[in-house]
Length: 190
Image: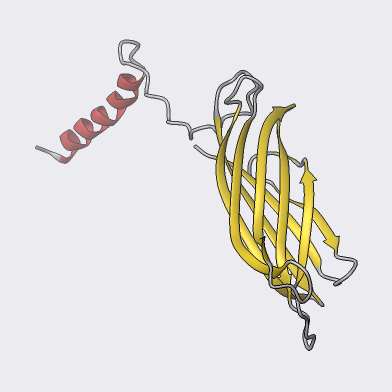
């Protein structure tokens, strides 16, 4: 085969390809897959699984004294009123003297007691977060017959979107000077 004949065959093959692509009988190309969309807040009873992270930190003189991270999963839009509740209780019972000099002992829970309810409103997830955190106060150089307990009781209602983190609380204990912060992160699970 001569050079001109080879060139003609190649040229014919190249020119024939666009014509085949424009042939109306050929099926259209398949659409590209789209990434899975995260569910939008729903008030119609369709469950939307959420992961909530709550981090309680206590600082004294800018030094981290305690950090209590808690993660749980709950569903928005699961019950008839569009809310679902998660409850977390973790801690230890600490023996305390009933009265100074008394042999009687009572126990007090030291730890975290958290209750979270979620509902949807206007494209947001609205959390109703009830939190009680109790910890032992350790003052340097102080001798005490009974321990001091730091307590925090708070109800918060942050409104969050998927992936958002807010510092829902920053509070100073008026007796000890410790600063307690509560950070809340919400993530929609796929």
